[in-house]
Length: 429
Image 1 (cartoon, rainbow, N blue to C red):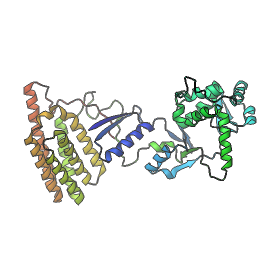
Image 2: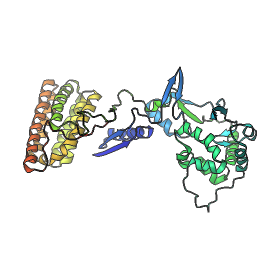
Image 3: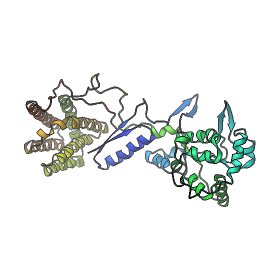
């Protein structure tokens, strides 16, 4: 079983968790935990409504030409909420010295392509306007330059062509609206790969944009995509927790049990909880289960028999057996509860597993699971509950025996119902 930690609950971390969940549902043996330090998930994606107005506190759109965000929207079932920018009517303002100054016409994503509106705009100083004019004669990128082919930041590229003021007054405000980051922290090849290609071919970004504009004019009959896309109810729709997704969050610094950092359920507390919870789940599975569920449980028993001498495989199949019982109830929340119990079991079981790796104990577990399966398949809730109780009672008895063996051998201090094994609380997807 591969265990994965995802650091950060922004769009990247949540996307990673989403992909891992697809693999897990396809049968991959993985477990993952997503860690987020703040009190909310979503990272820089945050939408607020103020006096009826929708305000984005972070990125307000994504580039339409890049398919990944729209693909994710389709997978999440919110593709119908995608809206495009009205590029003809769009007017963007930049706040400079407490004044809102409109971006001049002819700016094609950082690159000026019309002389008069740029010259007359108060957005740029005279020196920056001279640099814009000089940039038109910028030579193609010299292949003998030692920096050729190396990645650089957007800020470095824009400053090299137009100067630092262009970075501060145009690149940073525009890119923060799309990527939620500063131009000095964003890779050109990652976020603006076309700019790197245009510089290599034309040298001047202005000349490159004008050449592209001519091609677009020739194809005027072809509908063009909007430059930007967003979501009707805000970008935070991408990272909202939806009912049924099975996300659990614990507040920073809190723990599931006790007050100290080392608090956590002891092995016998866990077995008591399993007996109570899984007994009722088995009864519900007998009531709600279908023929396919019963067949799956029988296959799990047969798989355990086939791997009776393989401890790791047998443990994995045993876990799947109990999860299948929860699935048979038709209640996904119960499946998540059982998954959580078995995650805790895996952490507590390791220290004593060598005392349970015997043919007799393996055979007894298989017999117990077969009895549970028969009771569930017979649609007898009382018998299913009793079979699960007998199984976990026996496990507790064998566990106590294992604890006693360790205690007599002096290998480690035996945990009891009053001495809890350390287990930090974690959010469980």
